[in-house]
Amino acid sequence: MTITSAILDQMPLADVNAVVFDKRDQITTDLICCDVEVAGRVWTFHEEATGWADLIAHLSALPGFRSDWYSVVVHPTFATSETVAFERR
Image (cartoon, rainbow, N blue to C red; front, side, top):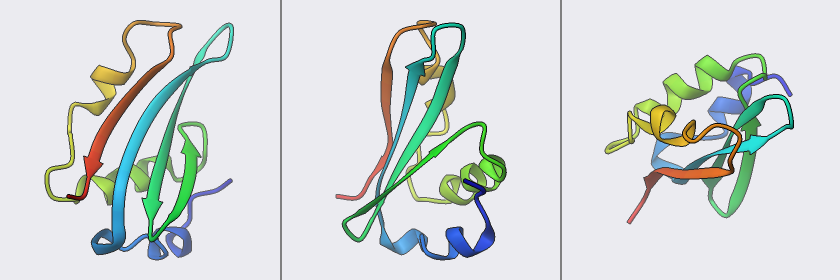
């Protein structure tokens, strides 16, 4: 999936309820994924998708977004890891 501006437009920051990053062991590599919950729908993206940097920049503007999410989710290597970067309360 390519992460386009049209997709980001469907995720207005005011409507984002949660952002969860996780790391999945792919045997020889790890794959970082991101689940974004918007109005009851969960969008799933991964770091190899075109537009990943645009997605991260968009989500980083959320109030209280956990800026250290990457360093937390990548360790330990080759182990499943999950980090909540944002949750609307």
